[in-house]
Image (cartoon, rainbow, N blue to C red; front, side, top):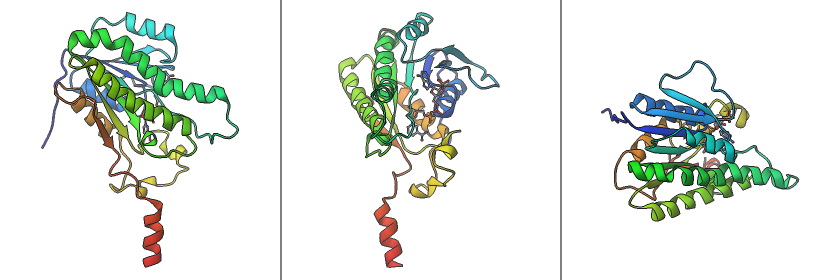
Length: 244
Ligand SMILES: NC(=O)c1ccc[n+]([C@@H]2O[C@H](COP(=O)([O-])OP(=O)(O)OC[C@H]3O[C@@H](n4cnc5c(N)ncnc54)[C@H](OP(=O)(O)O)[C@@H]3O)[C@@H](O)[C@H]2O)c1
């Protein structure tokens, strides 16, 4: 069975759409016929993706957001994807690092959604937040990030209620994902073995859910977990090795 979407005539903004999960989301909307705008702090790696327009913008910078939105007269979908955090156990890290992580993963998506709202209300559009399992279970080493993502999940629920029925707001809660940086991030270990599905999520797995959530429908204020069944708890490995 093949599921296809037709986003012809629709305009989609994907923050951080130049690599990783965001690039997968941008490509999927382009293939579905949308005009796609991506923003990031640096130029996208070559080759350029046909149908994707790049705007250099740091989502934490008010002037950059103003420039990004002043070039838009229609918007149907915003995917708040730009995000992330270095691994940094809390003890010994600076207040500035925490502030920047929370700014990127919570404040910026809020400001992007706020700025997009009039355009989305005019088109009957929607916002998709890219959340994280780190915001749904403890996230040691990235505590500020986990807290910001938990806040992002809740923000989406609040905006879904505040903006209904004009603009729908949903969250994709992503588990461990296979991006360009994954090998470095997990020290070359095959962390797919810690996932019931047996592998990490791909950008295409996340994009498929974005295409569905952004298509016209009744669903708003929802969280869709794209995590392959979650993470197998460490106690299960210990218990099964004791039994065997
Ligand atoms: N990878 C995972 O395992 C995983 C798991 C759960 C959730 N997520 C979430 O999925 C999203 C994408 O993650 P990813 O792993 O694909 O990230 P990634 O590979 O590091 O890519 C991040 C993208 O965001 C852009 N970006 C970063 N900071 C930005 C800023 N201040 N302003 C504008 N653009 C910015 C980057 O481009 P520039 O550097 O050029 O700005 C890049 O295009 C994030 O929200 C992340 O929290 C990822």
